[in-house]
Image 1 (cartoon, rainbow, N blue to C red):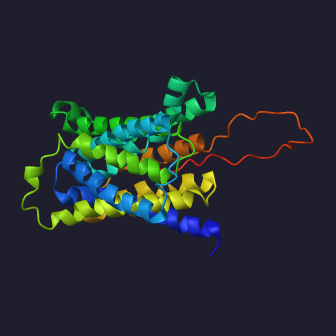
Image 2 (tube, rainbow, N blue to C red):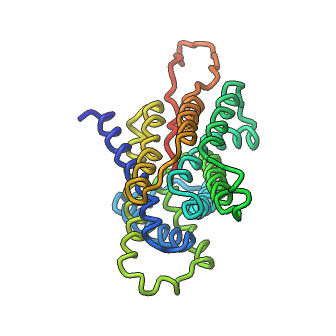
Length: 313
């Protein structure tokens, strides 16, 4: 098996696992804050064990600045999960997942707003296409405004989760010289004290088999999934990573239909390809080419593209 085939298999497996996340969250029966608290707790144990086994803590590469950035990114990631899981309750796994998959556009917009990264007319146009798709996928009707607003609240929670993910990505991109596994470990460790005041541990008494779903979220959807993703990123070109990332929402929608009988309507379905196409166009857009004079001592050559992987759910 070639390196790229191995990476494809690893990333596809990671995205299939990610697509089952919503079922684990709902079946646990716990509140969103409790779900995320135990996810980061069991996830920290899984990732910490892996990092220790590989001996990566000795030369971790963190400085006070990069450690601070990792902690800040962790705050955004943890609350991103809370709002995403809350949106499952107010909408459905399918709708919340597709709406959540608008995060690449927030990354572009935040980069332009906070760091003055160039926002081309083409990218702005594709972002507009994506949000047109978002309007279709949301399936909002006049009755949603008069029915207590629960569905609208769920859509807002999914959008807020996407925005928080975008903030985490923008912050984490400023970290260099540190293994992504270590950054992820810091981020889940941050979540333990951060969420402890919000967790209702008393509500977990007598949950029985539901603990299996929570342990699975930590070990499978945080430990194993991250290890597979990061291994794949090192072996795959950006284009392939971007395409395989859409395995996640596809599997999530199938699982939502198989387990709960939920599915999006015809008009909503029309918005999905708009979001997918726009996301690929934005993710795979070529950076402006910088021409430098060729010198005998430093021959010009192509540079490797920066991996643009899927989200850490």
